[in-house]
Picture 1: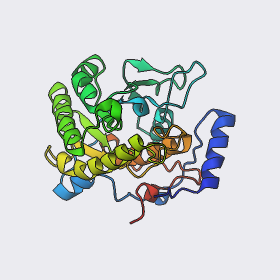
Picture 2: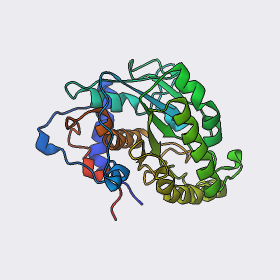
Picture 3: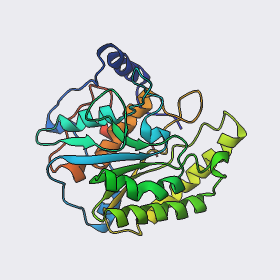
Length: 285
């Protein structure tokens, strides 16, 4: 499945970032914003939605190297990923302010530099550590980006059913450590199966896991956990395991929209600069 974003517009964005060191933004009127169908689908089905958080909202992105943002690197080699884009886009909306938290840090993009992404982490690794992470750096929203390593040889080729069982325990542990936490649970981006047989196997498992995730989320109180619909993105780096800058930007845009009503009752500012459109945050049927 191919991405729906214009390659020329995306290239323009990347060039602008390279030249200016900042995310291109353009504030448009409210009419430019259309609520994507993927936002809060669980809450809509239940007819319930949590109220927006108030004050500075602390977000923890945690999981594996994609949560850390590899391979988008600061000059010293620390990774920053999509956090700088997501934070910038969120914070241009009047009355809204978010900060990212965690023990890990990049050396660029302050305010959006903190995270709990750890290379090689599996769902089980995150489950074992999530209570300590949330205790050390409390957050109102946690973004879980983890699972691709479970499906690989290094993770023991866990099956989709085993991964779901592990993820259930992760969610239980997180909610026990922080009962009011709101969790954006990312689908696993399937590895590029053309790289080798290991990745081909892991890609199938990732897709099977993604198909099971909504049923797992439905086990928990309405709107406390939402799904980040990232499973249709492409692992675009040559290693077959990581997104490139364009995909990180796409993820930032779409996942911001998926958790937006947790952050503010206001409509988010349109920050697409002619590149990103909220109705492109899910694949065509």
